[in-house]
Image (tube, rainbow, N blue to C red; front, side, top):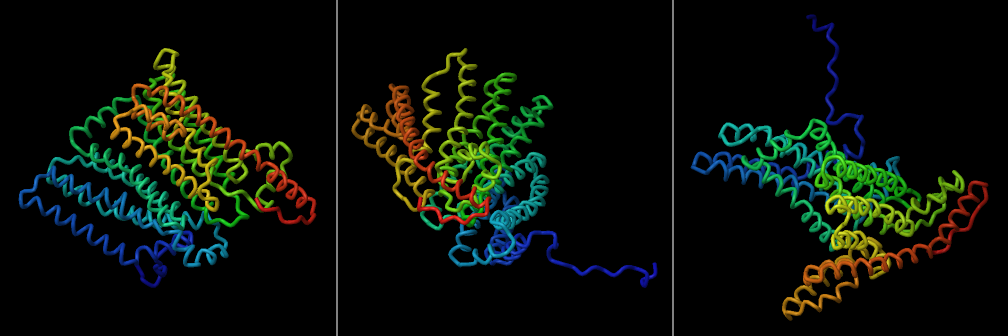
Length: 494
């Protein structure tokens, strides 16, 4: 072929122009840091030494355990932990204001942070594939099972990275450390599952059980898990975006609409599974439904009240009916109380169905009260304010005070040998759960009293939310005046 007729070679570029500038900025910065380079070199050096250890007599089972220990620590710990200061460093360094001056929204900024960090986890996961083949040659390793375990780790890493990025919007280091420990506790079962899954006997049993399911269930199960992970990533990123967004941006309404439909879908799926397959199958929907409900409660119950009428302007523009829905969808904790009660009704109704099917339409009262205590616990921090400046810090402070009080109560009752003293724990839903564990002979009375007092805490939260209605009506009037082209005075302090 004539070289003169060949087209010119396009210039090489490090990243495509189609990528978001925030992703390019963060990914270029992340790949060039000494931490990532040193961590990647040390990680592969350890893996090479681990592969070479078989030459000196190390058993393949021991090598496999060490291999997955390194993979778990890296994929679920080291790389996601880099998001611990992703947003707080921008906020304290003063660079966040410069980013908001561009055309990028707060959500694009947060998703750029997450995409760059998760891309590094994806790069590390791809670099593990040659070691899977090498270990397969040593024997005792099934490549398909190992690849599935690696995909599970990738999903966990995506979720953990999104959570770390979202929690990094909190400037208090102590709170971020507490959230990091809570997230580590949530990721621990995933790590245990991966360890069990990669074992030859347990993993083969799980795979056989999976392929024994009907084709529809084999498709629905991984699709459902993937859907929950995708929503979890979106939830954390949207929560982080709402924390750094200016007051004029309303991220809450979209978050609540998405959360309502996702949780409603899980509720419907749980009803169908309980009625058509088995009540135990409904746990695949009930467990994530409970977790997502409490997480959404943490989010909507800690939002600050809006101070600018433009955030309610879309509702006012659509008329009176839309403003009625605004009592559920307006940003702020006052509408969040009613929205959370709507969400909490979904897992409670599903559990009542599951309990009635299990016990022949006679649900066990203690289990119902336990679920009620879990669902009512997020409402207690609305009524107790130990930090009036930061609602998110206040929510976690009140929850941790209850947990610490329950632990101290357990220690005191154990030392004194008097289980009856656990009765003081019924003052809050969280301590009532500890009291039921301490005095197991009267556990039903403990959780029922805790659920009853939890309803009283919910009534207080509703009363406090109703007190903010005049404030919201004032914003609606100002938004209506803006539509008519009239100037309005700034709203009074909340």
